[in-house]
Length: 128
Image 1 (cartoon, rainbow, N blue to C red):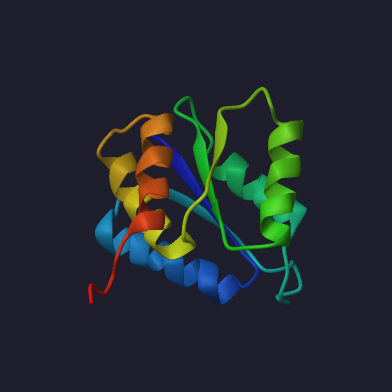
Image 2: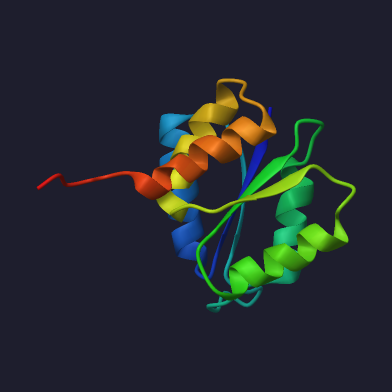
């Protein structure tokens, strides 16, 4: 099964997103890297690497990020771990994470999980 890593600047946000994903896809392999080691706001390279290691398997890992330095840090990690099957998903972090979790537990491939998550970019929530 494809693993998921949720990267946010806030530990509370990352926990909340993971909790929502598990309500929809309870068997999803999810790790979070929210905030800094001291509990502060920010992005931690070490926490992201540890989260990847926690869910990494043969099917790979999709990484979903909030904004700014979380994206830049994940890009650096992907360059340094180019031998691994890691992909970033360009999507809203909450919606994309939920869809990715459901796709992963349904047995979708790494590319399919990314594609499904990225489809949430065009989701219309309120149709006027």
